[in-house]
Length: 188
Image 1 (cartoon, rainbow, N blue to C red):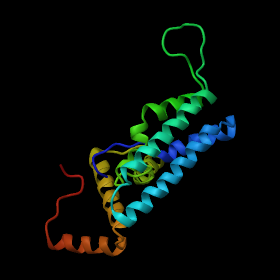
Image 2 (cartoon, helix red, strand yellow; image 1 turned 90 degrees about the vertical axis):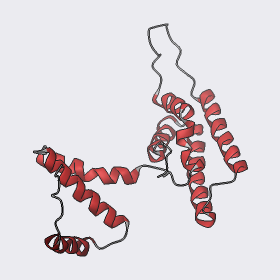
Image 3 (tube, one colour; image 1 turned 180 degrees about the vertical axis):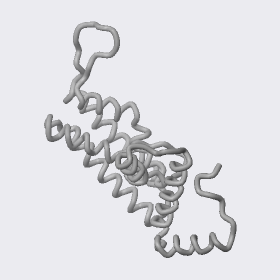
Image 4 (cartoon, one colour; image 1 turned 90 degrees about the horizontal axis):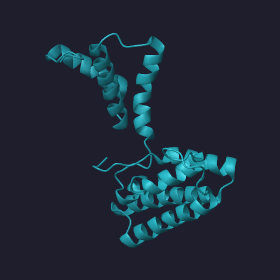
């Protein structure tokens, strides 16, 4: 996905929903709506033109994003208490607000580079089976086993993403391995 770094907006949407439902803060609702509309706008524009949104739309959207966060700071003020060492503990909604402001470039990265995903759900799905296997057996017995498992999972994931039949492709690979010398899975 290009060379940029982005944050997972699916996680942000979950946190924004929590802030709306538990603390009834309107900035969270407005920001959620902005992010979802922006996601749709970026995808639609990219499908039609294979380019990113025009600069005037990018600037306007970023301005609206920062404006929502600014108004959120009024709705969700910082906790001020006695002077102690370190940072003053803040509410979860205030921490989210500050994080979205501080890392705004990474939150909006998908808007500037359509090759960057809106969320990291695919990456999480790709590693889920590793965690499930680890929970079932408790551990891997060797580095070789870990490497073999990851190579096979990576191969299956790539085949699936490319729309190839998993079983047929694996059968062909096994048949081909008897005809040519393939490196051992997990071998250094």
